[in-house]
Every structure is written in C-alpha cells, then in structure tokens.
Image (tube, rainbow, N blue to C red; front, side):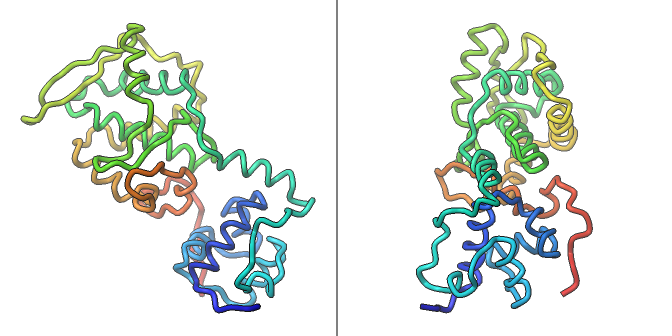
Length: 267
C-alpha cells in the first residue's frame, strides 16, 4: 500500500539504507552525481528529490520504488551480497566509541603542554578543546581519536569518564590540579607533570589537535562554550543524551573541517 511520505520520512529512510549499505554520504553523493551537502539536506528532510534522483538512489541503494514509498517499508531486510562486507565496515564505524585510555591520556597531556600556561585554559576550555579534537578528527577520517563518549549537558558537551581518568592521572603523578580565579570567577586548572608520549599519536591526530589549539585555545570559557552550542552534533542531540559522532557529517561552515570541494550544484 502506497502512502504520502514527508521529506523528513524520505530522508530518514535513505539515510538508514545508505548506512546499511556501508556507504558514506560522500560516496553516495558521487554515485548519483549530486553534492555531499545536498545529500545531507535530503537526509535531514530539508530538500526534496526529483524522480530521476530517486531512481538513481534506488539503483545504488538497491530498493524498489514501490516498496520504498509504502507505509510498511523496512530497511531491516537482508542486505545484498554485493554490499555485505561494506555493511560490516559501516557498522563498525558507526558503533558506540570505545575509550582508548592511553590515547586520551596522551591527548590531554599534549593539549596541556601547549595550553596550560594560558590563563583562560581552565576545565571548561580544556573539555571543549578535547571535544573539537575528537569530533573534527571523526569528520575528517571517519575514525575515533580518543574514543571518548560525550553527553549533552547544560554547560556543554562533556566527555564521560574524564573525571576518573584525571583522578588516575593525578594519582600517577602525571597531572596537578590547581584551584584559581580568572576574571573574577573560580577556575579549575590542570598542569602537566610529564610530557605526552608522541609515539601514541599519529601524525594526522596531532595535526587535528594542533589546528584546534591554534583556533580556539585563546578563547574564553564562555566563547568556546557558546561556539560548541552551535555545532550540529550538539544542536541535534537531546538534553542528557550521548552525542552521536555521525552528526558531524551534517556540519556546515564554519564548523565543518572537511574539504568537500565545490559542491553546491545548480538546481
């Protein structure tokens, strides 16, 4: 039985089919000859499809147009053999991140080596630098940097388990916690007592961290918090819920760090 679907419903179905087939937005957009931002807008339900585009999508994602437009359509059907290996890779990529203790320890030490002497870099700024390093890296490489899991809380994206990690680093003599004031407000600061083991960081990881530091480490706590609250992963997440890394692929300027080229096609 056919039904009238909203743009949002169509976008959700296409996004689910794409992920099940193991395709990135960029891969699918190239296959049907539209831009990655346009596909992102389709999946969000902000842009409609013409008949030709829908036909092209049905060929790449392997679905029947009649089934797709029906009320009882489901993407839970068995994937085709052609895409079986890709689907497994996609499921691994979009799975819940797994915290890498050695990695996050060395990322924290590296950030603090470069930033701990700046009077604005207290706990709030440190957390946001870590957030943007993690999510920018995922947008660029579709892989996790530290594997930290972030939650949307009123004062910003907060990496879970970080308090216990910092306590452990203090006990191990790697960090020192200092209570201070900055511009009349109480501030918690962390000083590194040892250098980061740079052999734990890939060149690509270090480059992303360096870019975040260069861009944001001089910002005040309120400025970097306000900026993080305008980022799509934060905006699209409900209060108290974990922030899905996949939401970085819906970013637009100035938050997007991936060069998708000149992708705004004429319509």
